[in-house]
Length: 383
Ligand SMILES: Cc1cc2nc3c(=O)[nH]c(=O)nc-3n(C[C@H](O)[C@H](O)[C@H](O)COP(=O)(O)OP(=O)(O)OC[C@H]3O[C@@H](n4cnc5c(N)ncnc54)[C@H](O)[C@@H]3O)c2cc1C
Image (cartoon, protein in one colour):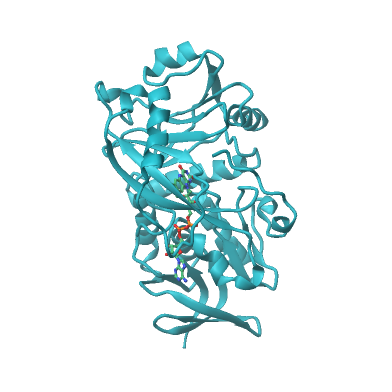
């Protein structure tokens, strides 16, 4: 049986970033991925991902994001591929909305550069967004997009000389015997000192003994072709954006980098088995996005250029879960990122490799602990 220092399960955002870090640190690593590189069955596809620093979800994330930004630019340099582009970001809602108050709280706590814009200032500056008189725009100077497929490819290309990537090979089961890990896959068996589960929505089925209260949620991203004038929506001019409506629903998206303007509703409330996902968009889903566009970006209310179905893996409080398995520090759980993890992936890859190789992490990640899952009340989704 072939033996490794570390086995990483999954090669989406978190697994490929982890493999890249383990390669740099000289660890003998095997990555098992049940599909191919950059497949579209999981959570990491869709051409763009939003990255923002004034983090409305919780200030705890801001120092981690600062490290993630550094690592994105490092990846860009090392790979010679554009993986990140700064566009600025606009979060809109009433001054009392979670989106705006959360962004302000994070920005003030950590000195993030921002500006509050009135509806007229938003209009003067961008000419494409409609805000109501009682709303404001929170402008995050340090926001932008990352390009997920290019990023995953870059992680892979930089790691592949030193890491064994086994695509189309699924982990079937694993065991812990005298502190060592044995795994059985669809093709072979291996042993390792450590195992890191970066398997997104499939995590609960691979550690059934933990009965993790995680839910896979199907979410759809649409790309719309702008009516004239198209250059206002181009990645050179348009910021990433988010709107929180008065009923709490959040819509967000990214500028046109060739494929159309991305628009999506954050959280559908449709929970699925990751092995049986209906990939079609329903008329209701499309109509909800269209109504949003009519209200907020009427120039975009044309025919959708395309759409794609993707999975969030939600913890009850919608934060991340990154921790050791309660039975062994040789088993590490990394992934469930509640629909907002991509921007962190190089930083999560770094801490996952620290957990495996050093037994501790440089940054504080206690916020993401497993134990809280049994006591934290679920956050209600605004659907
Ligand atoms: C529509 C949508 C929009 C999003 N927008 C943003 C955004 O703007 N900004 C942001 O920061 N985040 C965003 N996210 C969240 C972000 O993309 C995810 O948090 C991130 O991609 C999760 O990566 P992952 O590696 O954990 O999961 P995945 O990419 O799903 O990777 C898990 C991998 O494990 C593999 N696997 C599973 N089981 C096995 C097995 N038994 N054996 C071998 N391999 C296995 C799977 O095939 C898969 O490749 C969005 C997510 C979605 C769905």
